[in-house]
Image (tube, rainbow, N blue to C red; front, side, top):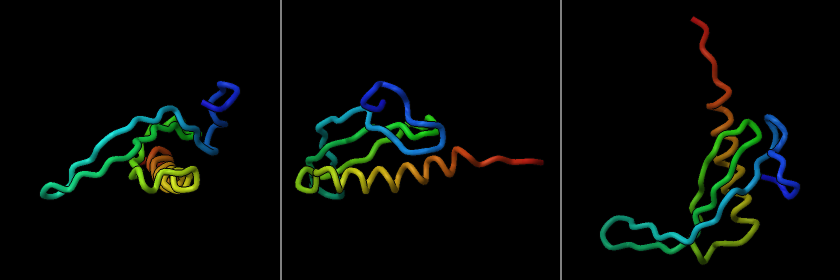
Amino acid sequence: MTANNAPPASGSGWSVESQTETTQVGPGTAVTNGITVGFVTGLGVHGTVFVPRDQYNPARVREAILAAASQLDAVASMTHEG
């Protein structure tokens, strides 16, 4: 939701819905502490991105969400005529 609690306009933008401290476990014993950020796109598609704690800042979160949101909306907009 945006600051005024309205969803973003259809097909445009995104808004953050949640932020949760999480840990990801990689190959072997690699552990990465970070934040999982939940968001919703202008088309109403929900997604999440994980940002390592040492990279967590507004610019990095924005970059991660922009990349994920554009892919999610592109798939959500797909149609098939057969």
